[in-house]
Length: 162
Image (tube, rainbow, N blue to C red; front, top):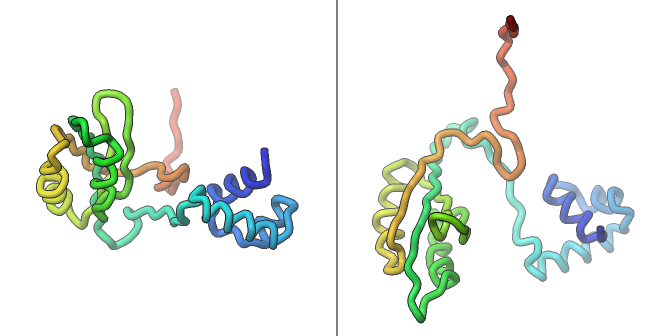
């Protein structure tokens, strides 16, 4: 494993590590860490840094849904063209081409179920290549980005076993 791999693993673990922390954990100098991070960002390997938010613990209403999409391709339109078009919508948080019963798996967010439904019916379904959408509203998220959410073990009942 290279120093770049080590840096990537550490950033995935916690993107808030400081350059000094990363230097200490990888035996690189801070200048080497900064140069490596700049190169990773320049190459697009590191595409951004985000917090993992447990929206259920906030007062903000966020409705999330996964949407299965089937598409029909023609001679001029490929999966990349369709993905590029769909990815432009700010409601689309994740978009993946997948194998299996459908072509794309898309995660969307809205302020309400109505907002998500309107977005799917008025923006996604009318895309000419889209032949079918199946929307699944996310009720509870237990794990996000490798982090277990709702990990409050406040069940103080005594366990009883036979």
